[in-house]
Structures are given as structure tokens and as C-alpha cells.
Image (cartoon, rainbow, N blue to C red; front, side, top):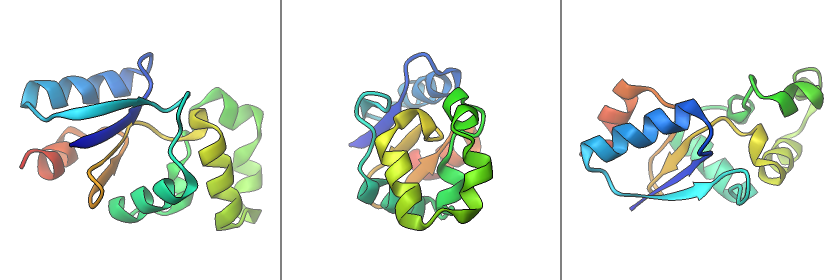
Amino acid sequence: MLKFYGYKKCNTCRKAEKWLSETGVAYEFVDITVNPPSAADIAAIADFAKIPLKKMFNTSGIQYRELKIKEKLPALSEREILALLSGNGRLIKRPLVTDGSHATVGFNENQFAEIWNR
């Protein structure tokens, strides 16, 4: 079963959940703001999704701007990035969806159809 890290008030998460439900794909919802994924899980999801860790940030989020992550990001190590993301689910781009060997970050209907509609 898929693990869906999302936030119920997030429009993108709602669109992704609707797509999964309408397609009949079973998933377990995890509130990313209450139970963010661990640093190891975030690293694995980024690897499965084939994206750099720096792309795991929710760049449109209030906390991203308040913490001035954009300015700090170039100097942050991988360990520091993982600590930031795993310590604050609101900094993570969402939704994160994984089955333990594949993952998607954000919602793109074509990508969801390719990866999750098997």
C-alpha cells in the first residue's frame, strides 16, 4: 500500500488524493505537518523520485520564506537539509507518495498515471 504524506488543507494534496481515490489506488494518509518522514525516508523518497534533495523544499510555503531557506540552501550540507526537512513537515514539498521502491513529489497527473496506475 502507498504511503501518502500530505496536508488536508493543501489544494495540491487534495487533487492528488482525489486522483488516487478515483483511480482505485489504496493509500495510507500521513499528516506531514504532524508526522513528517524521517531523514532516511526523505533521502530515500528523493532517490526513488530521482530529484535532488534541494528540490524537496516547499518553496511557496510561509516557513520557507520566514526561515530564509533560499538564501541558506547553497551552503547547507545534505545532513543539514535532511535535518531541516525531517524536523518541519511544512518545509517539505507535498504530497510525497511512496511504495518503498518508487516515489513522487508533488502532484502531476501524468506522472501519477505512469507510476501509480499499475
